[in-house]
Amino acid sequence: MMLNFLSSCYNKTVHLLTKTWDCVQVDNIIPADIKIHSKKDSVDAAQLISMLKLISWTFKKNRAYACSVNGRITVAGKYELQEQDKIIQCTSEIKHTINNYKITTLTENELVLSGRAENTSLVLHFKSR
Image (tube, rainbow, N blue to C red; front, side, top):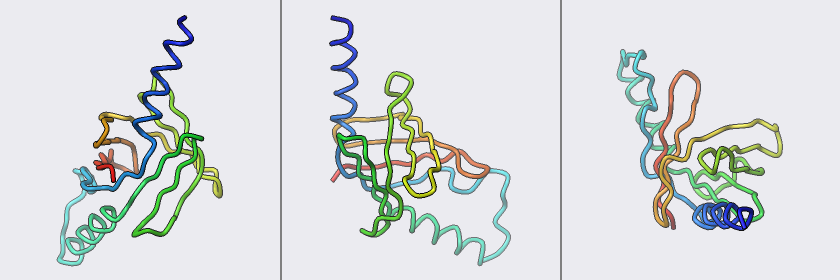
């Protein structure tokens, strides 16, 4: 009985996650200790934020994922849910890099992930298609 309960909870998370998610907002893209000193720095930061908003992630029930930028797949691999479905671990199939993201919000229409990138803790906000 306990196994059925755990399985149903796990399946609920996979069910909610399984779709294409479009990035709508990125928080903490520039670490707090970094200062923008020039127009070029400001333009570079704005371009990076704009590019990140072109990102879509697609998660499938077979634990495959793909990350695309402007409709072109840039990274694909497998994902696992860990720590009672609070962490999603993505392993790319080409470089075998592993990235962990904390799932802070997961509903039918909204996904919010937080993770580390370089010297900052990014927060990625997604809406479902």
